[in-house]
Amino acid sequence: MSVSPSSSDEDEDEGIDSYRKGGYHAVRIGDSFSGGRYIAQRKLGWGEFSTVWLAYDTTSFEFVALKIQKSAQQFAQAALHEIEVLSAIANGDPSNSKYVVRLIDHFKHTGPNGQHPCMVLEFLGDSLLRLVKHNRYKGLELDKVREICKCILTGLDYLHRELGIIHTDLKLENVLLLSTINATKDPIRSGTTPVLERPEGIPNGGATMNIIEKKLKQRARRAAARISRRSSMGGVGGGAKTNRSLDGIDLRCKVVDFGNACWDDKQFAQEIQTRQYRSPEVILQSGYSFSADMWSFACIAFELGTGEMMFTPKGGQGFSEDEDHLAMMMELLGKIPRKIANGGARSKDYFDRYGDLKRIRRLKYGSLEKLLIDKFRFSENDALEFAKFLGPLLDFEPEKRPTAQQCLQHPWLNIKSLNETEVKSESGMEKVNAGMRNLQMKAGLIRFKSLVRLRCINFDWIIMRKRPPKGELGKRFLGEASTCFNDVDIHQIHDPSFSEQISWPCSFEGLEEQSKLQS
Image (cartoon, rainbow, N blue to C red):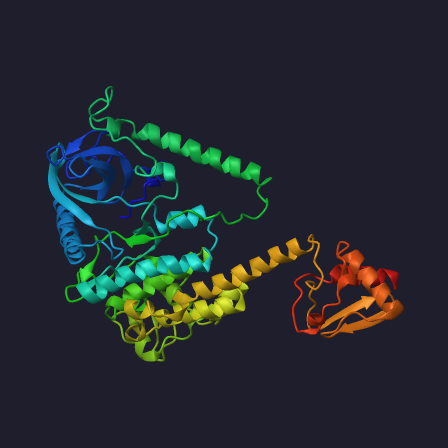
């Protein structure tokens, strides 16, 4: 499960039914664990197998995430497996620089519902899903997508190449930022004083007794938020949402949740990955390896860049969710090669011997690049470059997909500096244009473009590295130009260097408009 510091504020609680023998351990603020070393501060989140709490480590004097597993045997066994994987990750990364969550400690805690395996992990921030929600499900700027992708790829390269571990469940929820989006929810940045003992007035079992009350409050908050949004938008059909600024948010992130991870040579399950991020070889049960993670990574990158999932399959009349998923893949990426379509244990459920889907016959083929341009309004260049990066990762043949190490060398991840230079240059020119219009220029400093067509009174002038015309016409020209350029003393242009090829940053639209009116 992912651990988002603000998840418990908006999401449904785990309910009281699972607080029983074999289930969750009831935690109260101020409860101590592992001989008093860890003190519970507040709940961060929960999952099917565990709850996660912000805790204070009285030995290192740091805030940590305390994951408390259910006590039943099957959950305890799953915890042991996750601890084994996390231990291997921590042992291989002593500098904690690989962008993968770090296991600090683990122990068992005995409570009224049984013995609970516990894991102590480094405290991290919000999930990428919450980041996308914060951005109102609009695509992030591509430079920010690149920054996030580099972190994920660094983590995957470490897991795949150095440890031989397949994550098997990559998705936005399982990648956490190093810090929170809202600084007040970060105990370190907000300067939170740790709770070191249980506050008075909290009875035993208080963690479970007020769950119903909390649920009612959460529903009331959500209803109020919906009403507020509608009123601020002027009704249901209000204005379009705009992107929020992500400036100041630390976009470095780490891969988390290794409860379903496995070693490449020691796999446990055939059906892996969350539906929307599932690769075709997993659907067809033709075997999987590290490349399955790379498919999921491509889905994450697309979602970050567009704000929407790449594939959202649904079952329909006469066809299954799996078959709809395969159809969506083919419509976007092209027809699946026959050897791939017919190469899995479940291929016959979906494909005929020619490699065509049995129950979904009419497909509307497109392309990733076209989708980015038409639906998500990418520029042609951005769409082309992004599609070049994602396309190989979405190859139907798993062995042809690039590795995480190869992806880190892809040119798309290093476009940032070029684009930033262009943007800064354009921004700088706009500032120059605005400022120059209000400056009194000294003689010889006004510069024209090498070829500028001006309309002055009833005459067309082509200025090509020349000074203004002489005589009466020249005087009239200079008079018009002087008027349009805020009384700049153009009459003083007599510097021979004026004939050199130089550029003038200001617009001539004002002069041209005024001349048209007079003509």
